[in-house]
Length: 283
Image (cartoon, rainbow, N blue to C red; front, top):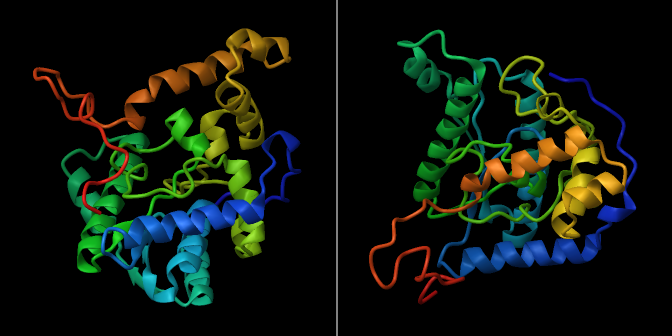
C-alpha cells in the first residue's frame, strides 16, 4: 500500500463553500433517493477518501438505516483498505456487508492467466459494480457513485465499473476539493492521509499512472474546463506543453465514458438524442 503523506496545501483557485457544498450534496442524495420511493443507498467502501466522503454524506442525508456499506476485497488488496473501511462503518453505525471477489475474478482469468494488470483491474471494478447493483435490489436501494470530477474528466475509471452508479454526489468535485470536504466531514485522518490508489495491485498509485499529481491536474482542468480556457491560454499561463496536450487528449479520448451508449438515429424521436428529460417521469 502506498505510504501516507501530509495534507496538501489548498489552492485558492479551487476554493469551496464547504458548508454550502455539504448542504447541497446531502439534499441531493436525500431528494434523489426518496423521490424514487426508496429509502437507502448501497455504497462500495474501498478504504479510500472518495467512497468515505460519499458514505458520510449519505449517512447525514438518510440516517444510519439509509446506508449499506459493501466491502469487496480482492486477494491482493492491502489489509489497511478493509481495516480503514470497517473503522468508518463502525463510526457511522451503518450496516456492512463483505464479499470477496477473488473467486469470481480468478475463475474468469483461469483460462487466460497471462492477462495483464489493466484487464484484471477492469474486471475487478466491474465485478464490484455487479455486486453493488445486486445488493441494491436486495435492499431496495440505489447505488451511490464515488467518482470525482478529476477522474470523470480524465476517463480515469472503468466504464460500467467504478464509473457506474444511480446517482453521484462527487462528480462535480475535483479530487483536491474532495479532500477539503473530507476534512470538514471529519473523515478519519488515516483515510485522508492516504496516497490515492485504487489498490488494484501492489504499489499502484493514481498519480503514478496519471503521470502528474492531483494538485497539478486539478488546477489545469479548472483552467480548461471551468474557466473554458484554450490550449493557448494554458501555455500562456506557463503550463508544460506536453502536460497540456496529454490532458486534452485524455479529456477528448474518454468522452465515450461520460455519455450513454450512442443510439443510431432512425425515427423522429430517438432515445438519448431527441427524447431526453432531466428527471424521471412520474417520480
